[in-house]
Length: 86
Image 1: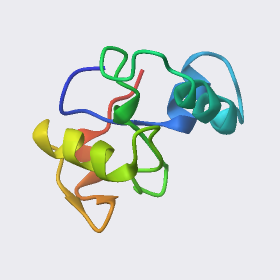
Image 2: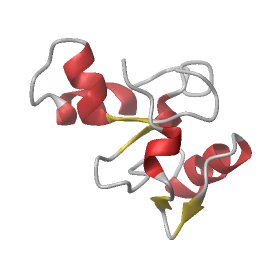
Image 3: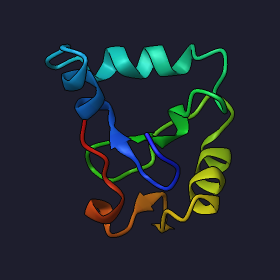
């Protein structure tokens, strides 16, 4: 997924064949040994909330903002502008 784009846990789950596998994707992301190299910070909740991050939501928020994603109160603004579909 390119820098400045986000996807949802659900979209990612469906793309790899895990119907209703959002929570499973979240657990996989939580155990990511290379969180900056494998950009799990770009996976967010379907309700536009940024969701969790192993190093804290403030780090995830700052990383997304540096990539150009507009966030207000931990919510992605103009969600469809940044949304990446597989």
